[in-house]
Length: 350
Image (cartoon, rainbow, N blue to C red; front, side, top):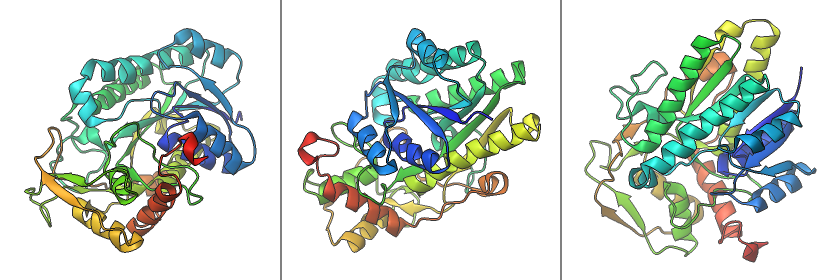
């Protein structure tokens, strides 16, 4: 069976770590990325870590002509689709940008895939599709309703994939709903490098620790949680990367044994199953690194929920996957990345 995978958004945070995991699992990869929130330097470092050059194509998923050239010149088994904007706050401010890139871009990708007969996809979805959960932990049958345009864009793509699977049973579509990725590669060579001010908690903490930012703003301390701060299911990006490989392996195996009907459209949570509050994460980071993190409480952000953590039993049962790395290891690896790369992928650190 063919072994070449197109990784859209493969120069980004999760994509770059997944490229390493795919290589280690024996897959041949092609990265397609418009570098809007990623760096060519990440690809260079991934190539160094795996010991061979990665084929990289700079392009946008909304560009059907460019995508057509990529598919016509490569014999792909399938696609892992990371290419998407991901800031909740930015999505609230610029919803049209998010619907254009995340939804329209995915439709274009699917149309080109169909044109070239490539109908195997692992989609980067999100726990935000569950909105404000009715019960915890959240399993895949939980109601879906979003509280911000970013989540709505992910949910819209899920609906599109569901409808596509109903219309044509030759599609094999897995949507990985993952929770809160943190951490970095143990080498300290690749990690999360947000443009401008971080939107996610862990890179904000690490940039305060390295002296790049003055203090952490914690949005809300009056939630009905253990300490008043929001609770999330933080998952190490290395575990997350392995989850994508496990999903791809499952997809291939089901096709080999002719059980396509077990896929069609298959949503799977990737999380640890444990909730950690913002203050607990801050305190663990300080314990691990010895770096005090000054913080202040501010108003809740629109679209945030009090608690969100996964039931990951479906991933364990179907994919044989479960998260292995702890909050302590997430903090250690984040600090290893940030302290060695205070300016992220900037040429100042090369």
